[in-house]
Amino acid sequence: MVHYKTPLLLTTLAALALGTKVSYADDRCLTFFWTGSRRAVVDRYKPSYVIGEGLEDVAMADIPGTRIRYQWSTQAATCIGAASSYGYFYHPSFQQTACSATESCFPGTRPRRMSERLADVLGVVQQLSQANPDATYQANLRSAKTSSFLVIDAMANAATTTQTTYDQLVHNYDSMIGDVEAVLAVQLPLPLRTAAFDEVCATSASKPLKDLYDQCFDEGERCELALDLFDTINDCTDYKNGAAIADLITRLGTTHAGLVAKRGVLASERDAIQTLWAAIQGYR
Image (cartoon, rainbow, N blue to C red; front, side, top):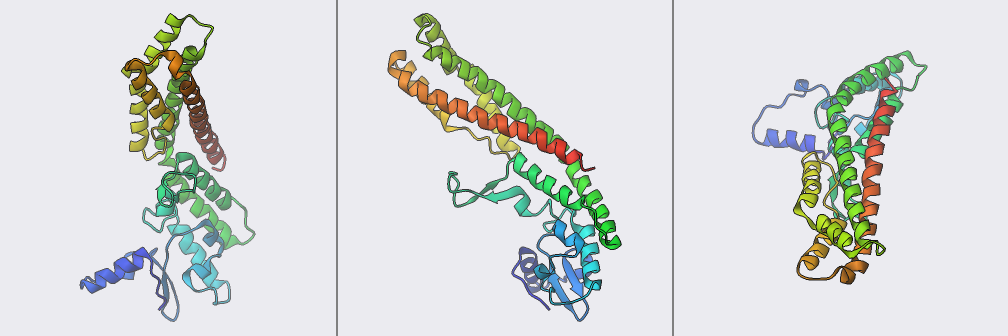
């Protein structure tokens, strides 16, 4: 028997230690079984498995012939869309990713953005849509693609809601950027610039942004409250404590640049979601 230190196997071993009866027959996707009692827990089914690849992942690459590859392909086609941790779209790697060195969460992990998940989905449907001259593999590709689209279709509402949220964020950023630009416009009369700064610092102006960021968090997205918004809050605090607009011009210029940059990131994510979702639908 082949042993792996995977979460599923550890769970199985824990159950055995507690005296709980474990039957591999209860979940045919949990392990890949071959003759001679060779069995291995499957960590995650991948599109490449459907064309008989990846036997090394279950420690059976040394077995020659097509019979094992056909059996492996058929099992992968059946299990790839399963709502368990070994299912491609339910594996932790689909929801989480390692933080890059430039991110504040480094060296930890973070939830993947919707665009990152959709790019992953697009890669899967592209692989499953490739024609294969082998009749067994071709049939299994069609089966895997059908089951995958059942999962993908269930993502439609989240994709639409997230895209709408980003669109609202972009709109609110546009409004705030316009107000900051009015404050920075030295050619405008001071009363107009003061009124614009009052609008920037109004609770009613910042609350919709925070509410949208909170909504993003609830939906598992990473459009978290950005540093430029904290800069705006700090500028407003000093302004309300008596600082003159002239004293804050340099800082406001930096804040404005941050707002514009963040707006670009938000707009890019919104557009990517729309583009990726449309591309995925093209592979039906």
